[in-house]
Length: 208
Image (cartoon, rainbow, N blue to C red; front, side, top):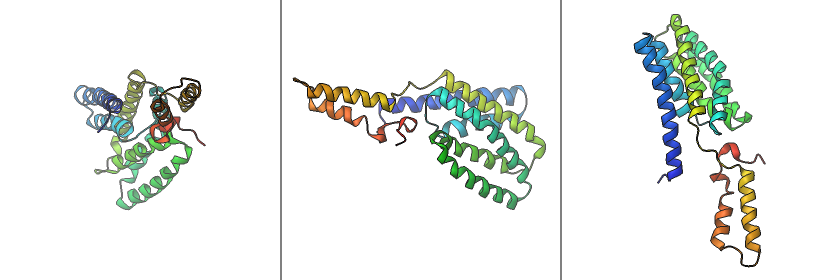
């Protein structure tokens, strides 16, 4: 069963992706008459915001998405050009997948955005081979990524306490527990449970 705070986080995430995808897709499709750009504007928030799990606050996630935009444009370009031949596309997929697998060494945020980057290459490789739509694809991808970054900034999740703050609060409880009169044992156990790494967001976990 998903708890209340986790459910609220999921709903806010879904709302951000929905707003960014809708604002990019419908004007480009029905206003500008650019179906390819509309498709990429729709896909970019889904790839970066829904299929990629980027830890951190809203501004931190937005910063990661903006820094990931140039590599995303490069991968979409490669996918578009290598789609001319199946084996070329497969070879590119192997190389790109191998390189993105090592992004995890850079930290949880680059590792979180890596699946979205790989998806941009995969989408661009899908038939038909249409290099003449490259500019439209890149424009739609850029619009979708920028809209999602804006939504991450304007509709952020509540700030999670850092591990240092959790540790300080647990030590305060322990100090009160050692004093005469103390605190109930259950409160001490609850304070200690907040230090479990499984309950700490990846971006806030100590690096050791």
